[in-house]
Length: 239
Ligand SMILES: NC(=O)c1ccc[n+]([C@@H]2O[C@H](COP(=O)([O-])OP(=O)(O)OC[C@H]3O[C@@H](n4cnc5c(N)ncnc54)[C@H](O)[C@@H]3O)[C@@H](O)[C@H]2O)c1
Image 1 (cartoon, rainbow, N blue to C red):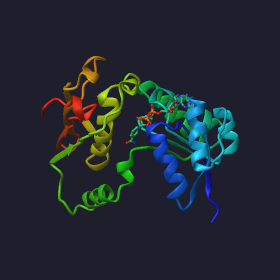
Image 2: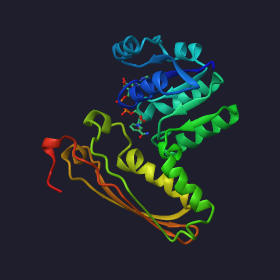
Image 3: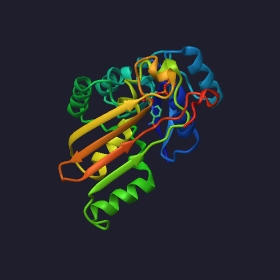
């Protein structure tokens, strides 16, 4: 079977995972080329995986049948719209952007182009989560009156990443907010609280521990708790 040639932009922490998956674990897709603003990083991975490297994002678009974007969140919208204009299907890491206006504008461009567009909310493709969603929508579990998720991230990113992440709610809690709406439905009321246990977060005005309370349109309630792990094992404050 001919594999769909995907060009991957951004080969940092997440991009490397996608690159290895595309090279070794996908029956219907392969890695057409890699591109990164850090040309040395892209070249090193291209050599390691024996795939072509693109010198620019435009070159990536020319070499690819579809695009995967794993660059910092603040760059997703621009790259997605450029790929859209080239008529290529896009997988974009979560979240789509750092603010609502840019996200809506990006989705409008994607819809106008009519291209397939997938966002990296990986739980939506995880068999266990999908089974839960199926059982809820089939009514097997009755009416949902309480939704609860807990996320633990024992390997948080380094401080350089945090500065451009959009903050803990946008970068991390977004996964839980997505499944809340997927599994239970529209949210009509939110209260959110955060604190930081790790100075790497508090020094940039961010948090690493959050509790979010939701009220759904159905009347159900939700609780999301997301204490993050320490930045390094040795700097871990006692918990
Ligand atoms: N789905 C998930 O669970 C999950 C997990 C981690 C990260 N992410 C998302 O993946 C994205 C990347 O995160 P990361 O941790 O891999 O970051 P990272 O900093 O490790 O890697 C980003 C890479 O993009 C490159 N880059 C920066 N600007 C670029 C540009 N304009 N064009 C091309 N390359 C560029 C950088 O040089 C770097 O190699 C973020 O949006 C993050 O939210 C998703």
